[in-house]
Image (tube, rainbow, N blue to C red; front, side, top):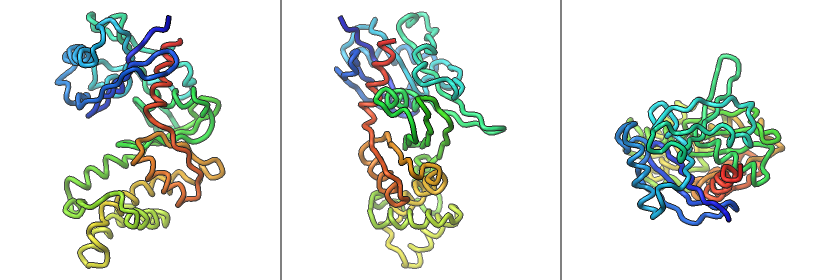
Length: 297
């Protein structure tokens, strides 16, 4: 008889939970705004998890695997990063047991990864679980891109991370939208195709990003560019900056993007603009496949 397991992608602002069977099929799912910041402190995570299982009408003894910021220094408990040399398929052997006595033996946390390149380092928490799912689906080699608040470009070779780089794309877009000289112009449709293409074109010229961003404002106030395209131009600039930095390494290989439909569509357009083939992977399916790997281990 197949067992079931709950996989939780516990981020900073949001939380997504999936009831998974061994085949990777999703039997139930739940999403809410109870991310790390909303929980209210380390000693409240247990009660928050209990509330989640109750909301999904699941028994309290169902096994739970959590990934993301729940394992950060500000989460339920800090879990050390794995070195990037550890194959993704070995993640099930490195789960950290939750030390809260009420959840001992039932709840575990997936560790993130650290990549060291000389004196510099980069880290991920949560994306490693999606990468495991992608590997299990056959994407063992090449570039995988995980767009979001902190976008990741990850190079895999036979299911092992060779390198990865993080870009603060989503966070910068949010900050520019909420404050500063561009904020009053950021109310337009950020998916406007003409504005997005304008931003991509500017990014492709490898001009200084801070100057390109200011010229968005200059274009609007001088009436050389429509204000309703400003948000899309900024989006194109920020996403284009990722491609300008990373696309040359992916030339001839293409990329696979794991992201929501709207965001993945923008990255697919950017990939086309920079001459890269692009495959889009469904993030929910990838995550469910990953959780099934933990269940089978």
